[in-house]
Image 1: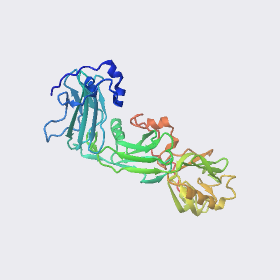
Image 2: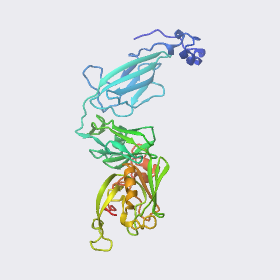
Image 3: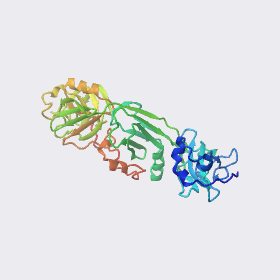
Image 4: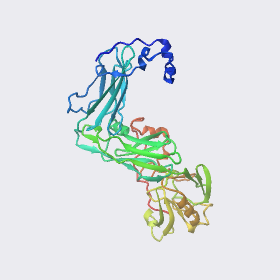
Length: 419
């Protein structure tokens, strides 16, 4: 459609835009094209989507919007589907073209709002809706987030398990862009590719106390590879509690428990003796068991030997899948606070173990220092994610580091239950 040219804005009015918004009348709206009501810009911009009703756009092709006249320019584009997913895009410096920089979803309904300016600076607007076709690939990729929804400590990573393996770096980048983790309050974080089917997400530092963490997948209908498309996945919500960090010093035989950076308890402990040293580094509470039967035969100790044991252990807080616990050890009370006599676990009196059991939750941090043991495995034996420094962690992201991993699932050093 045509419209009457408008006089160009004079310098005086340009400098008084703020005042005009506030209600000043130094320049009338008839003299300022930017103050005019946007006109219908249907003739100014064109889309590469089908205009015929009933035809659907190809989700394999990027969305592209161009101007019809070199004197006109696009100033802003917002493209969003019916589920609220926005499409990222890039606008040319001269405003002549906008194109999407991430895939459109298949079988989706989009609304696109385009803002323009003509050669006089007068604003225009066009709104277009269109549908995309169904996915052509046969395989569907779904995501299962972990852990299960609930209350956790500040050290709990978010996990994403894929239904199909993804090896190609470009495809990994598509997947990673579609996996969203948001926290309130907001913190810096990143995904790390553990292997072809598993990713972990953690902040640079621990989660803030009392944060709310939400994870969701935007991959439904998104093309990942030639024959692989994303499908729907269930969202996840975690409620983070107090900042609880328990630090065990294996050399001084003391555990210091901090809550929100204040010391709330100091506990005499015993850790792993020579040959059974407790792992150093940061671990995360995996769960709590009131009673666990622990046997020496499970870690290769011959029955009847001087190291043999078969015990019912109470107030057991698990920190590795292979069987490292913080637990009650009434048989070693005389050594607690003085020497290390366990087979790898952290032992304490029954009353102290009961206190610890009642005051920690899944996701709380248990850190061991000054042990002669190896460092906690990064993956595969619980959550050793925090033992990877931030630079290496971001190198494991397909978006910031090419998805280069510094450790895979390694079960070669896993030990079964020990006391």
